[in-house]
Structure formats: structure tokens, C-alpha cells
Amino acid sequence: AQKITQTQPGMFVQEKEAVTLDCTYDTSDPSYGLFWYKQPSSGEMIFLIYQGSYDQQNATEGRYSLNFQKARKSANLVISASQLGDSAMYFCAMREDATSSSNTGKLIFGQGTTLQVKP
Amino acid sequence: DGGITQSPKYLFRKEGQNVTLSCEQNLNHDAMYWYRQDPGQGLRLIYYSQIVNDFQKGDIAEGYSVSREKKESFPLTVTSAQKNPTAFYLCASSKQGWNSPLHFGNGTRLTVT
Image (cartoon, rainbow over all chains, first blue to last red; front, side, top):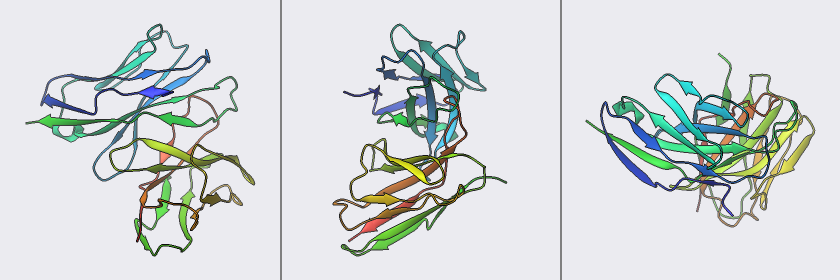
């Protein structure tokens, strides 16, 4: 079964508008972390934002925010005021078994969503 | 500046040859990872290492081998047993701690013909 599901293979957004990229996850572990990465056409993976399962508030980092709905097991990325440079592939990822501070367990990735920002 | 260096950026090999991809980090991270990415797809974990001289298989380890003799280095060998080796390979590292993000290198694009 898919641990991380990103149902939108491709998305378009008009420059300066906001866009939401969907991510749902599957885990029975009460402790886990959720990460979003951006991959431009050049291929590097850029870390954007992190949400822990026990965090009370939704994470925000500049124009990026996370709409974390724990009961629904969703962690959607919201990009506000889209820019042309936001055109890229976006990946949601999860790390389970986060039960000790020494854990550096593997990160499981979704299939990604390709975002294109229109001028 | 600290970071992760993967070399080379592009690599071409003939079928039947083993090839080793380099990954070096100067971030002083304990954990290192190798992922494979096929066109339009997500990342799949090949191997990971949480400490020197120890490593674990990921989801698609068959046909690959690694070593972790130094904290800074985690080379990946793609052997001739790997049936579809042509792909984009990404190396990453992270600090200890489940809330630590992975830091990635710029990747190596391997083409086997």
C-alpha cells in the first residue's frame, strides 16, 4: 500500500495566486514527521517545510505553509503568491518510527506533483 | 560552505560493467542515504547508513552495493546484476533526529547502454 499519496500529477497556477498541493499519508505510528521538497528541472532536491505529528500549529516558512489535518492524515502544501520560479516538481515525504531522538529512519516519498506557474 | 558533493554529474557505461557513484559530505552528518529516481517518478530508497561501518538495505537494494568506511563518504556501486540501472541517483545526509530534513546532493545521471 502507498504510504504517501500525491493525487495531482500536474497542476497549473496563475502567477501571484495561491495554490494547494495535496498529500495524504498512511501510518499507524503515532510519532512521525512530514516533509515537503521542491525539485526544479535541474534535479536538486530543496527542503521546504517540516511538520511533526505532535505539532499543535501548522508549519509555515515564508510563502509556504502546511495545512495539516491529522485525523484525515493529510498534509497539504500551500504556496501563496506564486512566482515563475516556483515551477518545479514537489514531493511530500514521511519519516516513521520517530520514537527516539537518535532515530534517523528512512524518508518515504510520494510520486510528486508537477507545478507550472503561468505568467 | 558545507554540503554534499556527488560526482560525476553525468555517467555513461556499457551494459555488464560495474560503476561506482561518489558521495561526499562535509556537514558532519551521521546518516547518509542513496535514492533512485526514474523519469516523472518519486524517489526510492536503495541503501542507508546511520553510522560508520553500518548500513541497511532500502526498498530496492538488489543489484547495488555500498560501503561506509568514513563518516564523510558513502559510495554506491551499481553492479551488472542491476537489471535497469539507467536512472537519476541522489545521495543525501541528515543529522540525528527524526525531525531532521535530508540534505541532498545535485545527483548523478547514469546511462547504461
